[in-house]
Image (cartoon, rainbow, N blue to C red; front, side, top):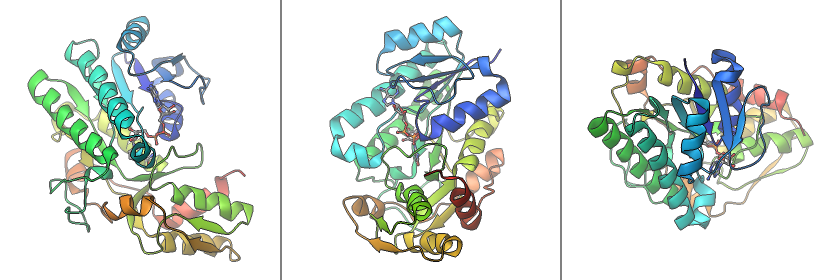
Length: 310
Ligand code: NAD
C-alpha cells in the first residue's frame, strides 16, 4: 500500500501537493511534515520534522510505514543568497538523508524538486534545452545543480528511483511564496486586489519562466506515477508553463482592474533573474511521460485575481 511522506508540507507547494495527494490516494496515505508546527491541511496525519535530523526522519518513516517521500524543504533563491552556508547545508543534507533512506531500501521512490536556477548566464536564454551549459551563479542554483547530479548518481549506482522536475516560478493563491525571485508574480495580485500601486522588484522587461500551481502539482504527481522505464532523465526534467515579463503580467492584471498602477524598483533579485533563462524547452518531458501545460497567462491572471484573499 502506498504511504507517502511530504517533507516541507506547510510551504507554497506542500500546501497544495498534500491536498492533491490526499484526494488521489486517501487522507491516511499521506503524512504531512514540516519544521513549522503548522499543518495547512488537517485531513490527515502531520509530524513536526527537521529534515536534517536523520534519526527523527527514520523514526517517522518506520512509524508510518512510509514508502515514498516528496522532499520540498529547502531555502529558496532570494533567502539563500542571504545565508549561503545554511542554504547549502539544508538543501544538501536534506537530500542526502532522503536519498540514503532509499539506498538502504527503506523507501521505494523519491520526488525532489530542482529549479530553473540550475541554469546560469552562459546558458542559452531562449527555449533553454534539457541538456545544455549549466553554470549557475547563485548559491541556490549551485545547490540544485549539485542535487541533480547526486540524484542521477544514486539512480545509476544504487538503483534509487528518484524523480525530479526543474520548476519554473510557481504562482498560486492558496499560500504565500517562500522567498524566491519570482515572488513578484504572486505579490502583484495582492496589490491589485487591495487597490494599491505595485512596487516591482524586477525591471519591466525581465522575462522568466512561470507556471500556475495546478499545472505544477499535476506534473509532479504524473511524473511520480509514470512507469519507471519512461522516466529516462534521472537528474531533473525541464517543464514549461508560460513565460512573461513584469510588464506583461501587469498588463494582464490591468485588463481586470483598469486603475491598477505599477512602479519598478529593482533590487538584488534583478541580478538573480538576469542569470536565469527567459523560456524553457520541455520537449523531453513531453516525449518521456506526456507532460503538457494547461494554463496560459490570461487563465492565470483571471484565476489569481478572482481567488487571492486580502
Ligand atoms: P517554501 O519555502 O514555501 O516551503 C518550504 C517548506 O519547508 C516551509 O514550510 C518550511 O517551513 C519547510 N522547511 C524549511 N526547513 C525545513 C527543515 N529543516 N525540515 C523540514 N521542513 C523545513 O518553498 P516551496 O516554494 O514550497 O518550494 C518547495 C521546493 O520546490 C523547494 O525545494 C524549492 O527549491 C522548489 N522550487 C520552488 C519553486 C517555487 O516557485 N515555489 C520554484 C522552483 C523550485
